[in-house]
Image 1 (cartoon, one colour):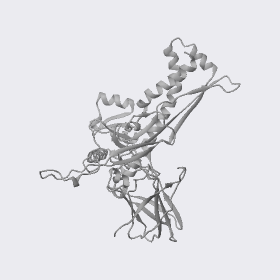
Image 2: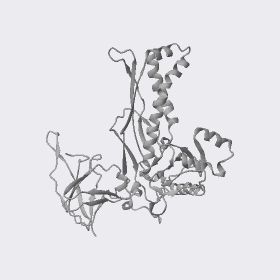
Image 3: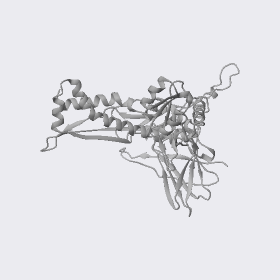
Image 4: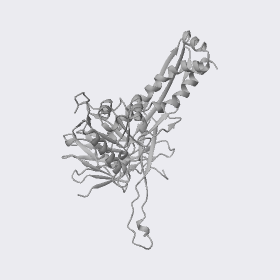
Length: 128
Length: 300
């Protein structure tokens, strides 16, 4: 299976640099494919938020897969997803557990899951 | 020097100097004492990614084979705090004032710092013991069952911990350093260790016993700590790791006291706080075991 890829959507700040906002694009999850979040930790310090809507009529789970870095030995983490509800995953405090060599993280979804996902964060580096 | 100044100075000085010696499981922690940290602060622990060797067959290296070495981060939250709040009545202050020498005065004042320091150290030990959940190396029975500790298998448990830590991350990075390894165990597990013939009849071991240490075993210096964690089924989780390297942490370096008298009051009140946070940032540096350790006279 080829994972469906999403990018972290970053905030744009107003002209007075007082508030940031972003109009989000949601990705519909194909359970069999799973999701890859590209460059998942490239945003500003620890501001990644993954938002998953479980539109199924039963509870489900998302598995954050162990990656390639030093703490991958701790293994996968499973987060519960309540039916007909949105779950925010944030902050990820042990990036070395989940990050892959290319900077991405992998998510797998429980059998029968239907819903959407998006990831947001605060932009790091130059520019607004 | 006023009694008020003496109390505060003695308290602050002895707290930092003697805290380290009070730590047990806390000795797995890097003893870096940070200033100006508050509850809620985060300390970033960063480490370089691993560098992979490539095959060399002669000639120049290909620029396309260059490996970008990134950083990985684990965050340690400073989220634990303890406070001390006590008062000295006039009678106690007169007792300190009338002490004949400065040494006697300091001795009286230190009584107030010792208990708080020990409790603070215990709180740190407890948090370090709770880090067993972040151990990459877990020694368990079949299907994650607890291992029933016996006189016969305790040496195997330590040998397994040693082997796992020596293997480290399985990518060439060992967690083992001769002379620096610690085992944090419960009193019951210490009792099983005490029955090992190789530990007996040594003057040095006898000295260690007096301090609560079981001595050295399989390359580990054994420290007994009541804060070793237990689950709801009574299974305990000792820690195996490297002194000053396995756990990262931050401790506010001064348990700085303030003092004052309430309006209309005669007793002097003293108060201060200390905050800290601990975390095992690199999981492969920590090993634990799921043990059923109940020492009885008839224990096999």
